[in-house]
Length: 340
Image (cartoon, rainbow, N blue to C red; front, side, top):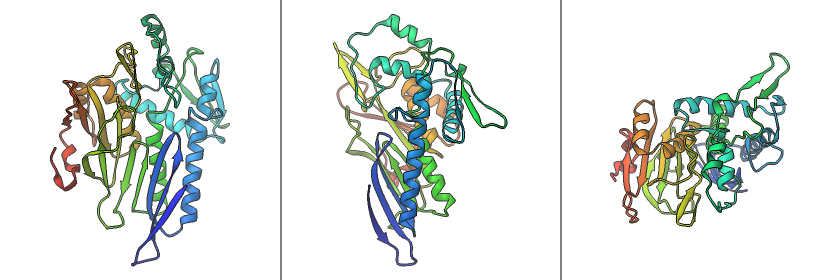
C-alpha cells in the first residue's frame, strides 16, 4: 500500500492518497481527512470483508462455497454481512436490465475460459454444450432466504452445476461501501477508483470538481490514452468493454462479455461503454448489460431509467477509427464542456 499526504492550510485536514491491489484490481483512493491511520485501517477492513464474501479468487469466500455446493447452501449472517446485500442488489439490477445483467452466467464464463484471472482459450466451440449450459443460467430461480431469529441465510441451487459470479457488480459495490464509510465519518471530499469503477464527491486538492477520463479501448489492456476527459463529482462511473479480456481461435474472437440469452461470447462492434450513475453498483451492472444488449437496445433502456447516462465507443467498419454515441444527458459531464 502506497500513500502520500497533501496538507490544507485552512485546517488540520489533508488529502491522503492510498494505492494498492485488491479484488483483482488496482485501486487509488484520495480523501480529505485528519486521521490517516484510521482511514487506512478502514479501507483495508472493507476490502478484506468484501473479498471474503463474494470474490472468486478467495477459495474460502461465501461465493466459492456456494458454487462448490451440490444443493442449497447456508451460512451464518454474523460471519458475512455482505453477501445478501450484493445478492439483493443484483436481483434488482437483473430485473431493471430485463436479464441482461445476469450473475448466473458463471458456467458459461468457465466454459469460455474467462472465469479465472488468467484467460484459458477455448479449443473448439460446441453449440450443444452451450445450450446445455444456458439451462443453468437461471438467476430468477435462485432464491435467498433468512431465518427470522437465527440469522441463518440459505441460497437455493436449482441444479448442482449452477454457479454465480458477482464480478460485474462487486467492484462497484466495493466503491459504494468505501464512499458510504467516508460519508458516515463526515468526509465530503474524496475520489475512489477501483479498476474501471470510479466515484467521487466534493472537490480535489485544487478545490475543483474531480476529473477523470474515458480511455482508449486497447485489446487486453485496461487502456492508457484518454479519449474523453470528464469532470465528475457526486457521481459514480464504470466502464466495460470487449477490449479488456479477449482472445481469438481459428479466426473467431471471444470476449468475457457473455450473453445470458444466447450463450454467445462473440464480441460486437461496441468496444466499450462508460456508464455514469448515482451509485457505482448500478453503473457497473449497467455497463455489462449495455455491452450485452448492443447500442440501440441500450439507448432505449437508458431512456426509461433515471439518472443513468452512457457513452459508447464502437468501430462499425473495423478500420480502427472510433465512433462515439452518447445518451441524451451525457454531455454535461464533459470537461470544460468539450465536445466529441
